[in-house]
Image 1 (cartoon, rainbow, N blue to C red):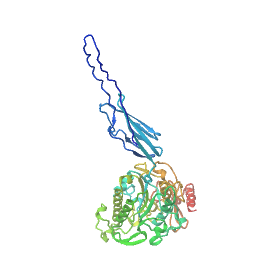
Image 2: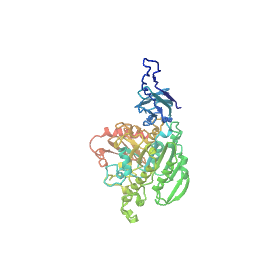
Image 3: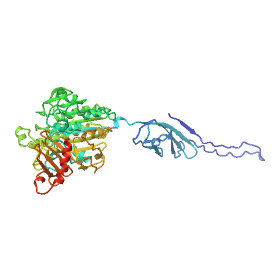
Length: 529
């Protein structure tokens, strides 16, 4: 709707009408009075759209081009709204503010020339409900067999990979120091996917199948009315049983990757696409990245992607030279003699490919994506930094087996370049991802959301965290102390603040540590119930 209202300033032009005089002469004519010309609409405003709850700005003067004044008068502007301003404000003809209600607002801008002349132009601002696309995309990246001793975001080792992409994510977000998972991959993945500890799902060992009766995070998002607009996928490593169609039978709408625990050759491996398997000769990390780029590029709804790289899991094959910074021959002898070098090169290659994935996304989509990066268990024993974790690695309940890297960055994360020490269990990703997607169901199963950590430090959701292995051994810790309990019920107790390598068992000393041991034992027993 556009309306133009023209108001002309009137003036009276006086002249002598003649008439006799004593001399019969004619009075001299007077000069005509200048007529003020009102401004006119030179370039009418087009209708505009805005989003409810999103900041809006529009210059209704169009940088001085909406109106024209032939007299060269300086124009001033006023704005009116119908039926109401609806959260909009204005200054000198420029609209601003944040709309607070969906609906049509008619805006009328009036230009005044200061000499009684004015003209108005009207246009609509259509305030729309937020698009579902404004909900954040959620990207969970899982590295296979990467402990904190092999992560540049932790100061534990001087022998770490060059990972500029992960470094940038850490610098723009939060590094978490105390994430615990299971010491091997299958139970970790099951707990992430269900929010339930392995002693309840029965997934405690490598290769244990995930019961299809469990509601995985992808199914939860699909079924919740508040998150049902999300599309989801799992690209990369599955390793939760069920055969070639295992991921789809479990509730994954789109799967592309590796069904089992790994590959025998990074350049020749079985690629599974929604139950159909073919041989693939692309470098596996690059192919998984290609699949993620293709899938994301086809989405118009908000999405959740579980991106599970196989790297840096064995075998320690040489990545393409363009993906890493190390000078390596790739011979069997060199791999056997310098396994950690090849292991770290695989992490560097993964970092490069994560960068390619993020760069492939349009800036608006990238800005609207929250990224979570974690390891699924500690570094394998043969390539761990033994100066950091001399007493255990992948497969053990030591810190080297269960304490893994974690970075969160992107949409909805206001903390920048910070570290977080709160205790987090792998199961907690279940409720966290659901909440990030908009679910209002709260904490589910054994899972406790850590969404609050993304914007504030100091909050404590958990007093204890827990991990376990298939033979019945388990471990529990609080903010400082860690209790290990073997399958034979033999206990050891460590002070992680002063003894992070777990060298000195406090229970073997002469002092009374029951005040430390007993609460930990009670917490561990509660987890196991």
